[in-house]
Length: 562
Image (cartoon, rainbow, N blue to C red):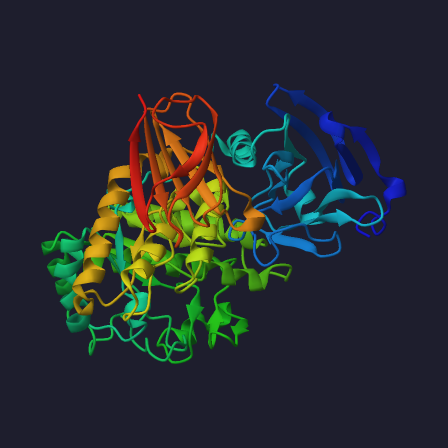
């Protein structure tokens, strides 16, 4: 259907390697191609609105990965696959992969700031896979040329995505990681929701430090009118003095426990209860019923200047070590709408806003942590946040694992954090380990009332964080090898400097390439004892060609192979 709906008779087709076909139409045409053996770079002239189409043989395709991945993780029909993108939502990058995890089509477009859409899916009529990139008039008005990058050879899909990301964004700036970004986080959100106060959180601070956390993320609820899970009071961004009579004093006490403090805010939201509402209302024409707040339009200079000063003021006045900046993707309510401000595109406006925030915060607190969250994962905004966090998935270990690994596939040098980890207070310790192992390939965040935890739960946290910290360089910086996204990444591996870490989440057969491996670390993150394996290359006398490693449930085994 996708191929039949868009004037294919006016499309010019070019044959590419691996039986991929490239079509251009309307005001788009191919200017030239460069092939370095790893990627094919296609330069496209954009004179007016038009379209770019990629057709790939279906082969043994098992799924299609893209940054806005949600819902269906397999193969959508071409009339169903849609992903809107801009600087604050997703990115025009995708990979079609076979049942053995080999990439069949991996591509990326270097238009990642402005608004756009990727259409994709299996063509029922043609029995192939189709990707369509509509090129609208706004894109044509901003640039006369874009670049499309396509992976040249079949290879494991994580490697193909890394190749596309490096080819497109390798020279783009990334905010340097703050030291605390690489350390476990104690978050207040799931622990207390908006019911936080100086007294409540202060009870947890010494416990957090003892367990191995190095920061506290003071989440929603610290601000005036921060109650009821709604945001009608947002906009002033001052403390609720009944909860935090002296917020700067709280920050000082946290520092005394060796904990940095990162403060949550949702700067684009403004509510009718706030004192700022009357002044900001002219710049907020869209109302979010779900949040019960108005959304500020960043295309107005007045909005950007106000929010930059707000962020700098919070860091300056309260001695903060960073900001967790939330609900940025809500600015997309203004996508495809006329602008009354000085900028006409949400993506470009958000880049200006976030650049201003990062610069202003760095003047006040050099090296401060700034956290963004899925779905604003575009490499375009990587220069403005050193941390990108998995989306909300309370107590859903499987979703947390998938979200962390999805982020790792696209993010380059940004630090990926897990969604804050929670569990039932009465749960067995295995449930604690299950949740913590789910976020192992990112930086763990934990959100439980720490002072009230049982001794067994505290011990499980302490042991898991110590294990994670001992493997951190490999888990966060190693090359990833993953099970299929469509199956939820049932196993994941990371290798670096002679160490291979394998985490088996679903008791699946793990294939081990032991070439150059001196130490093998196997984590059994499942309820079934033993980890089945098969050595594919680089065998060792310490390990048979295949078998079952004797690793207890929720346990770990370390083997010296060198």
